[in-house]
Length: 193
Image (cartoon, rainbow, N blue to C red; front, side, top):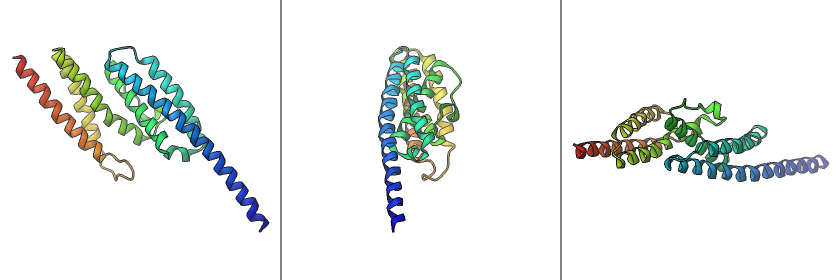
């Protein structure tokens, strides 16, 4: 039974280590999420957001280091949320700036987080499109809507079990966003005539 004591001590040490890493990952995840929200707000406010996004990516690299050391942390809620928010902010930035969209591997996030971030990007693009309509910039509104259609089509292309990628609800939301946006842009164009 002496071996049992050694094994229990070893397991406890391992659990203490995992708990410490989890606490660090939660803290860093929250920091990343705060920064990505600030970057998205700056995008909507038409302010410079690249530095904020760069800081979020730097903060995420600390989280990535923890995930690399202990992949189990990857499946904790906060880390997954941070990856999804980072994906959304980076994808939105690339669309708004007309740059190449980052891949999940270039961001160092899971494919699932990237797809969910891509889906969430539609709501942010809708806001940008509505701002263009309010400013009577119909060309910009139409351009944004065209980009939304491409992204929506990509989001709708996924047909996998929710255990692999919980996308079905976001697909329903995306469909609804596109229907409302199509109606809004049509009405605005008709009223402008």
